[in-house]
Image (tube, rainbow, N blue to C red; front, side, top):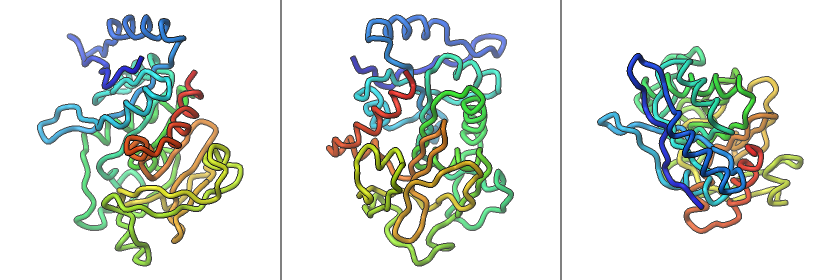
Length: 259
């Protein structure tokens, strides 16, 4: 059974974040599906402020055997802790740029576009996720977010700061070099992979304890790992949705960690 775009409910009177009704139903569903793990997916916001997330994320998690739970904006650490206590793992999805103030820099230029509400929510969720010890998957913005939360920094605009790079935005495809011993190498047995690219930012200062596991030909970080975090700069959920079925193994790897 695949559950698409299941939502954690919002706040109730008194500002207390409550997911009890959802959890009762979800846990019942999980029991009926051999205890499929509940996998949260962080969301973006529309211009009107409503919760927004492309279907590819929930489809990928569902096909991999998890129950996807779309997580709306949280507004306190208490809410974030409540969300993480109900989940078996979390995916941080793509979207806007992260405020460079988080890694001690001023905004570089007009290409840097942010959502302060989402930034705060994702930072709360990321801190709660790290503290929980539960598996984390970062995709695109999510990879950058976790890099920052672990102590790193970003190139704010690749065309400006690394002008020799090509094809890192607009859905272009390019090859990446995969490090032996990495999850990507173990899953696919290849030292290079063809991936998509929708970003103009990338990890710059690599945090202590982070293992970079894939680079673009120009040296841009395309994937990294820790014992808790699996992160990729590209969009495997889009590749899977577009028919590249090998990427289902990647999501099965993550969902398996959440069991």
